[in-house]
Length: 128
Length: 222
Image 1 (cartoon, each protein chain N blue to C red):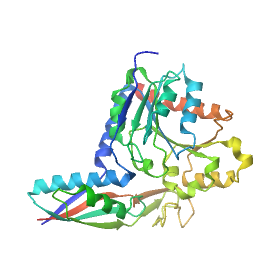
Image 2: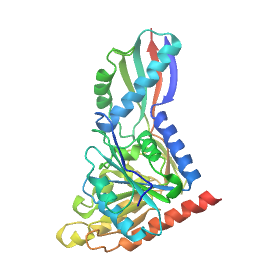
Image 3: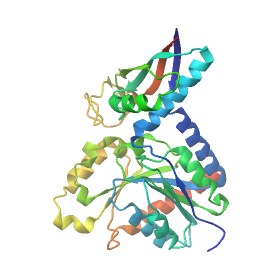
Image 4: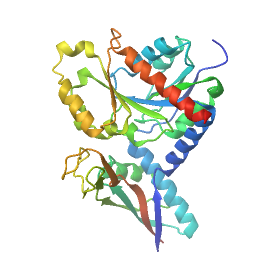
């Protein structure tokens, strides 16, 4: 078979998925700081849905390393958990799923729409 | 000063995934994201699909691993184009990595690309790659409790393959319990019992995969 060639890609050290998230946080924060003409970012408020799999401590750890030499070097990370909310598609009840193994507490149906609880976004930053 | 940001942290990945999806739709290529724990039989399951569908469906494979080219070389030896991505430690593929791999494939000549994601039951479920379909494998030796321990992935897929069913007599795997939990997490999911070792169940999985490609073609021609 001809007409194609194999290729390989190598990406640098980038363990666990919080690394990618931390890179995303820094990129947004740096962009916002430039837009606002800020010289220092003091605090970053991050909203994480309580059913998302991202771990605060892990993001903190990568942030300390990745932010060195940037405008956000000494910024404090504040993690706010967003309470999960779901609608049952069968009986229309609204409820708070307590774990990722959720089903409707009223009728037991697993067919539910998770409308809140999987968020991952930067709410605001405090800058000087 | 307080700056209101309200910006999704994974927005870059979502944008890249949407671009991949559009590009594949325009080329009429079906992209399947295959996820599983290390050693569940992802490569073996892809090999079964190649053996069954080669000739009828033009395929390529994108291999995601932390290191090594072992899987890409295995696929290439079957005369199927393979792109190896080494993540260098990252536990999942991102949409941008897939974009770069797509650049190296002749999309016009392909019907189906299977992505073998990095072996992991957690992170890959959080990253959209632009796939048309998500499939996962859970193998008998991993135990029947995995749907309870990793519910996100079981909830997010269209099909679950239970591999290594030839080992059922030697393991304490409770099939009824496994199927019950999977169905309660994801009532519309397709479940395939498979043994890549002796080929049992391979026909059902390959027919479903071929059907997915046909459905994707129908969308393209509309």
